[in-house]
Length: 116
Image 1 (cartoon, rainbow, N blue to C red):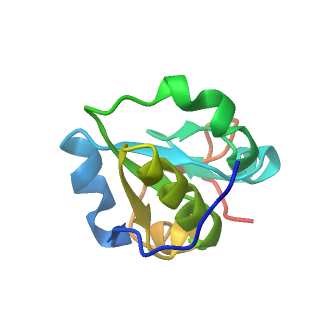
Image 2: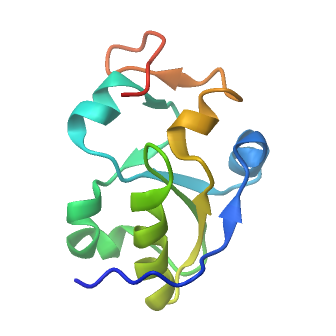
C-alpha cells in the first residue's frame, strides 16, 4: 500500500459532532493503545496499518471523517482512500483538537478518555 501526500479535504474539529449527527462516519486510524486511552464514542477503529485489508468496510455512498492523534496519519489514510474513490475528509488537528470540542471522548472502559 502506498500513502501519497496530495492535498485532501479537511474538516474542523468544531464541526465534527454536527457532521456525525448528519451521517458522516468517523474512522479512527490510531494504534490500539491510543484508541483504548481515548476515542470518540461514535468512532470506528481501523488502525492505519490495516486500512488496505479493511477496504470492504467502506462504501462509496458514505461520507467519512478520518482521524488520528494530530492529523498526519489520517491525512495519509485520507489520501489513500480518496485514490480508491471514497468520500473522505481529514480531521484537521486530529483527536488533540477534537478533545477540545467534544464531550464524547471515552476510554475502553467507558470513562472519560484522554489523548495519548
